[in-house]
Image (tube, rainbow, N blue to C red; front, side, top):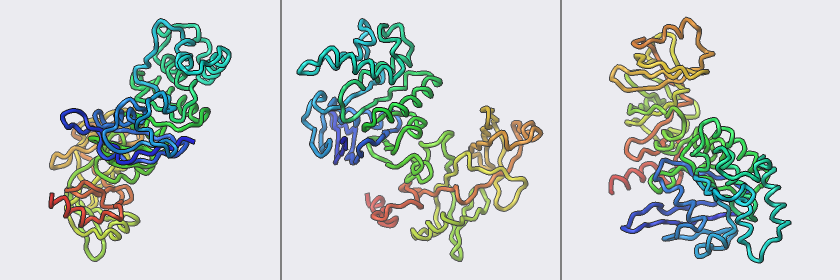
Length: 393
């Protein structure tokens, strides 16, 4: 068992600098959870508090119901992989991997150390490198050694602090796949820190999106992508980032429509039902549409927006079209090249006039003051009460 529970955890540095605010999270046994966010958001600090490398200012951390606040890292039964590998340059790969086992008291036998190291090396595909020293290895091989050193211990929780950030793009892709396979083989609880949303989306059972020491949203990759709870999550998750701009949401005769850049686009289906259920009326909003959900229209209509093409980026299997509206608002459209004729692609030059629109099912609506979603509202936080609290502050 390796359940981890953080309750009201806070980290305050000297000078009353708060790095992590009131962090609450339950991590299930054998769950792979990812902390993601921009630099300085508190994700690595939170991981280091779980590991015992940072003292907790307030709150409690529990492993399987046992409070571990005062336990030293060596007593918490955790293994940690660092960003910089932290390998001993004068030791062989075998000795680097065996090092934590030699610190265990009572002393482990040579046979058991050999068995654990060779088994981990076999799983990671680095058996042939056991007699080499780190300087003779590539970045990806060194990272496998660092992971292997963490694997050989009996641990409840496997902690990884941006382990792939020093690798090039090709190696990162390869190591992501290997971490997914590794997770299935060692079958323990993982807590993984990254600033890379691709890693978060591909690795995590759940993602914890953080900003300025606060949790912005916790959910599965699908939940944080399709149902962002606030503007920060909506813009942070997804590449290129979501198009967002202020416009009006209008409710008339029980029907909703939005009016971006003079267009009148109806809101129908589930999105309209959610707005009605949450008691949303006519108001100014922040409208969000992901680049891949912007639709190129064949001709102008009251539901289309006139735009001028500024830049056409060829990305292999897709185009990224950088557009400007009549009031100079920038937008990005992501278009699969297989959907375009050669003739149309050749016409996509700077200054080209295009028309776009948005489908109701892919639009997102955010409050201009709170920046919270008007669609996915926590029922204990009604919109009106939330706005009044903020205005009072």
